[in-house]
Length: 203
Length: 203
DNA sequence: GTCTATACGTCGATAGAC
DNA sequence: GTCTATCGACGTATAGAC
Picture 1 (cartoon, helix red, strand yellow):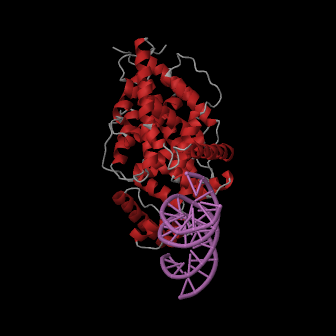
Picture 2 (picture 1 turned 90 degrees about the horizontal axis):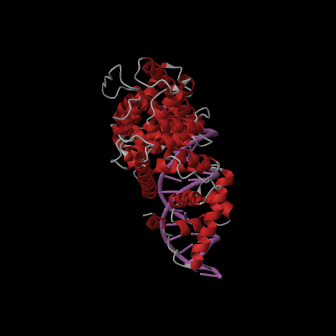
Picture 3 (picture 1 turned 180 degrees about the vertical axis):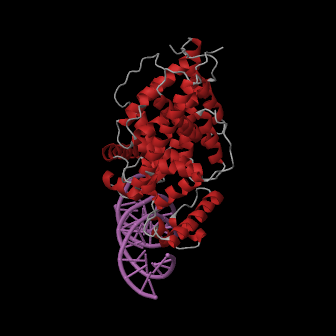
């Protein structure tokens, strides 16, 4: 559950504590959006927010939890009203989502940092975050894939869960390659994958 | 070029310096293989190698460069004589390579750490490493794809470079998902991608 | 409850002795 | 060529002001 790991540290049940925590989180997000992923230490964030670094640990427990919350909250906000057509394929939805994230400086770097932390052995919060995110995404996309298979938009000899994992992996991996070399066309590659999944034979 | 960024720090032109550097590098690799990716600080590595952390910076300049060299050297060693059939598809070659890397504890984590560092703005060594690695991989795989298109094993309506980027992205992304959830079948997903690229229509 | 002040141990990096 | 010593910054923990 997202709720359990997203539960405020110690003061969350009280209105004022929640409000203050949210206020700090909002400012932290703004700092990330404005300054990118540099200087993401507790002390640097605290200084920009206008509190001491100890105040941040009071509300978030640890830097790890703060980073996860910043990313979660950023994802929660609709970045700019992107009304996806309801028949959009999962790959193109991932592409649009990636495009939206790219608008926020530092967000992609933050995500990669969290994933890198997650696969280390001593970062349980990041690990829970990443495991949960991937599991939910796979589940949701696999469900869409089943529907698209029934409507004839994806070939039916493919395991929906494998397709979901592949789409997520492709989107994440292409995003990183694009960040390092803008000649890598994230969207075109996902469109190609879409075409392959559709199964229309070569001309 | 890899040579320029891989050039020893200050003593590399002299035989003894090179030898000592290589000796330290060998031990560092052994430490990573034995202990995984934990405790990868300069001081921890130095202690296991048997020198002070200042000695490591003398040979490698920075932790960043040491980590890159450890990964490069690990990749340079043939992990266990895996004679790929010459007609293996790029996707299956990536799968085999990933499988081999998985045998060395901490290597996949080290790779992810380097990639995460690379997309930050203040890690030029990691950035050069990652950019170079992806560019070389894309180039090599795209070349293979062209050959496989000519021999009829990959459908000819696909841009070879996009295919290469997609295969690399899929392999990297699936590896991460697998690390977080072993139910994600890295090899099966890449096999599926292979099948899609081949273009054989659904039964 | 909120938050500051302060201290602890570790980190990467560097200067200078030998 | 390698050490010791030291620096500033880091995440974390705790005591206590309010």
